[in-house]
Image 1 (cartoon, helix red, strand yellow):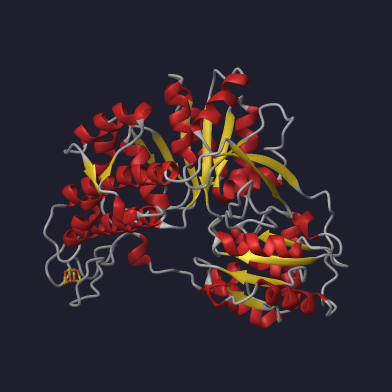
Image 2: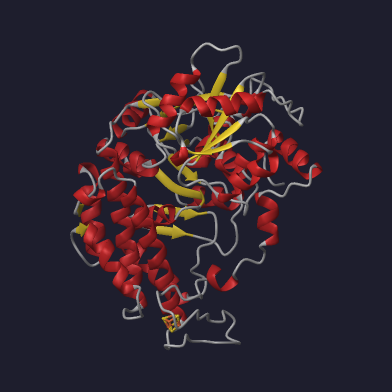
Length: 490
Ligand code: SF4
């Protein structure tokens, strides 16, 4: 199955009937994806004598042109991905040029100090990110030094995400709605993809709230779009964005930075008007185009059940989570699940199965990213439920839970952190940073480390010396494997 959502399955059938290829078909056509890169044996250095690739089975090339071996190649790739992750985190900060030192906040500073002792260095700085780029010009460091640097960049990434939070208005919790039910009935719907400027969305919301014969609504197609008093409602998760266009219920797409190129292609094929946020002159023009598209009868008869919408609160501060945990008289076990949809798994399978199974085992579950949207869509995070799943801010995710537990001296309650899917390199850097801090982390999709046993062993030993663990698999892990991982590590 491509997705666990029955509504998505209906939309998939509609796409197939109309001969439209979506992300799953592209994924299948791409198989096998570059096997060298997948195991870390495609050289990541900024060197024009390549590309050099090493045969994982030992039958072809065993060194790059410069003599680089498989261990150096795998370690360099890990470092390069961590570097991109740290840079992504730096770019989320409103004024990145103004910061130099990076640190973790008070309840976690002791953990960070211990971790840095294990990682052979003390303070962390933004300059370290830039210095890492010089390590990736030509081979010059041992694989071990590069793995250490990748772990340090992971902790720097956590520090930068913390910095981002303190530079924004912290709010306790914000309302969020998600589900295909938002597309029910007659209304003009503008879908938002990527991250258009917040002022533009607010101006559109204001303009669309004016009285008109047909209601106008704005929905997110999977990106976390924060407003002053909440989040834009989510019609779907990020993996389902193409399906929401197939529904015929999106009358216009407003595209911001970070949206996948497929969205503009699909809009063109489906005749859905698309506006790029950097080209917007007037919000009135966007509404005019959306109204015009709405007046043309849709080719599909899709009309979901309006009850397919669930609400949840997104926790934005550690204080808020801490007070919620206290009110719940929470003593026991917390499991964190987060990450993006990936076609390596049936969409929603890992977060839905694991949330149900872990709750049945008495765990409190908290999530972020697409995994959190699946929790909301399935009603696991709705208020009034016993031990409702908790939804965490997309950027802080596990860091927020760590701070809340550390403040109340209950860090041992955290039973593990699972990344259900990875998309941006920032996710990988965060996973490394958390394991580097001494936490138990599991990644449900394969990491490009299988080309070097030496790198895998060094990484595992280094993390174990600091009390941490990074479990990863040579295949997309199934829900039972991850459940077992949680149960075996309590
Ligand atoms: S650094 Fe070495 S292995 Fe990498 S592309 Fe250049 S020559 Fe090839």
